[in-house]
Image (cartoon, rainbow, N blue to C red; front, side, top):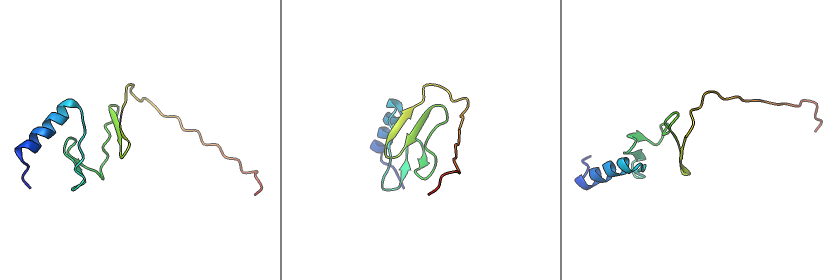
Length: 76
């Protein structure tokens, strides 16, 4: 599939300005050069969640602490 010159210029301009483009016809992101079934996020830079958008990560994530609590003495 050939891309038109205008489409190529628009994609480059979007990359420079920091916008992400999604081709809904082919489920492809030309600015990230990834399909939408792949992970679109970049570790320690930004988190992209569809359809919510992009969240910039300002601090590096060093570790995650997950605490699970369970109570087995509940009568239902």
